[in-house]
Amino acid sequence: MNTADRPRGGRREATRQKLFEAAVTLISEQGYGATTVDEIAERAGVAKGTVYYNFGGKDELYAALMEWGVTRLAETLRSSVPDPVEQLEPREALATVLRAGVVFISTHEAMARLLMAEAWRTNRAWYATVRQIRTEAIGVITEQLDAMVERGLARPDLDTPLAGSAL
Image (cartoon, rainbow, N blue to C red; front, side, top):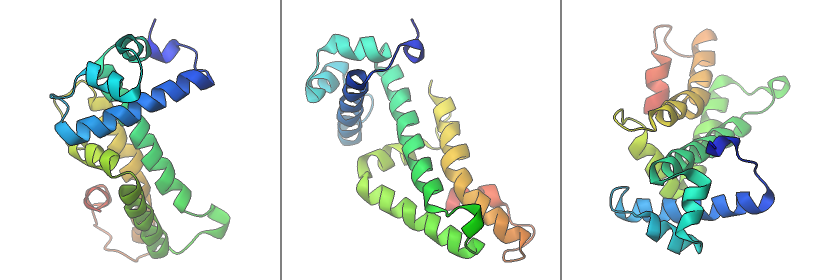
């Protein structure tokens, strides 16, 4: 059975959360290649088989971890922008999004380190998740840059996807 098809209860989510926290800490400290499933399970306080049951293996755990981190980052950035009814000026909205990104990084430093390390890799099995970083998280910044261009607050030829990635 595919891990995405398995039911998710509160206990299961708590276990996955512990595995994510253990994995992000270990991988940020010693790197992906040097981190073993045994170490992740031990750090999470679960049996090794729990990792395989929940994810299938280390690669699948890491892909799910990256997706989880990207989703958290994108939600943080997106929630920093007020509702369209109360829309800030694009420059203010961009500054708000960037501040939220800095707070995310300072609060989740190990996860931010992993996300940035993976953001430009193209040779991994979890490349779809890397694309998710670019489209979801960076997309929030790019949207604000697009609004600035539309309102004449930035050069009309500004490459907003490139600028969003840089920011």
